[in-house]
Amino acid sequence: MSNHGSDSLAEARKRVQVRGAASLARAANMGRKRARLITRMRGVAAVALACASLVGCASSTDVVASDKPGTYTVAASATGGRMAWARAHELAINEARDYCERRGMQSSVNMETVSGVSVMTEHGSSVSFECHPRF
Image: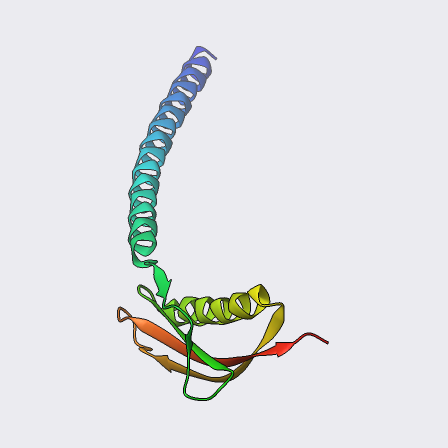
């Protein structure tokens, strides 16, 4: 019977050692996962910073009268990223609308010309429009 008790005690010690080793392995594994997560978060932060720097800016020209009476033209440009054309378009349309609204009228776009559709180039939008009375 004493032999059986010794065996039980030895088995218990082995289980404790195995559990202790398993805990150490889990802790080491968590450390590696944490390091990978931190590395990944740094990568995401770097990508976000790079994207923010590519957002660029947009600018527009003054509204000018065209050769046709009552017809005006405004151009806008934007740089950075593949959606720069959308910012240029929106800025040109907003400038046309604001120009007509300051005169108590509404804008009507006749034609729009866009340029620069590839990434990392200046994108442009030129809008030809008229101002009409509000109904």
